[in-house]
Image (tube, rainbow, N blue to C red; front, top):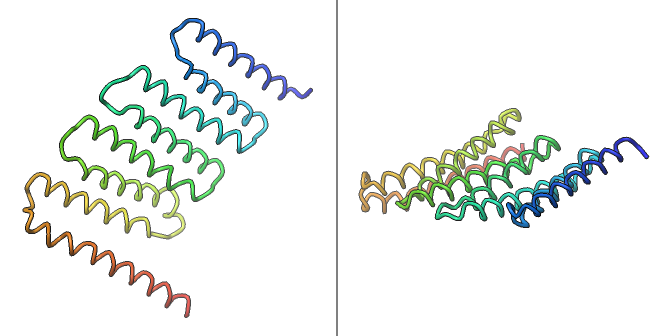
Length: 211
């Protein structure tokens, strides 16, 4: 049997032993098993380089960590939602940087931004909808710098800038800096602007293909 196989068996046995020991101490709930099962799948990945094992292990780790946080920190603050969304985003980022699959970069940055918003909204009970659009806009900027800047493509900056600008408007309105009558005008103006920008992008793309 190869040395890697022996190492893998040894790691799995150690993790199972740790799981049983922790359960016997009554300090941890059964959710700790999820974390250790996730670690077992990661051990399989590092031994065999199976992508399915990496994905399975990391998702199970996120679910396990979320359950443990929910058990130990049962407060009004939404730590479980924050942990799950940020953890899942980290999973996608690890997959993105390890496998270089471009599609993973989107949930990798967008999910943590939503997770941060769930945490903020559970701490501050005022009008915080502007923070959601602001964080979402920042995630598109992060996507641009991580993947698209080196490609010479700037399209993530468009939704990022629109979302951040919209967040600024919501902030001004929620703090009565902009009056509701002006907001009604803006509420019709900005989607019209989006439609015009979208039509221009499609038109330019069609012209580029026909040339």
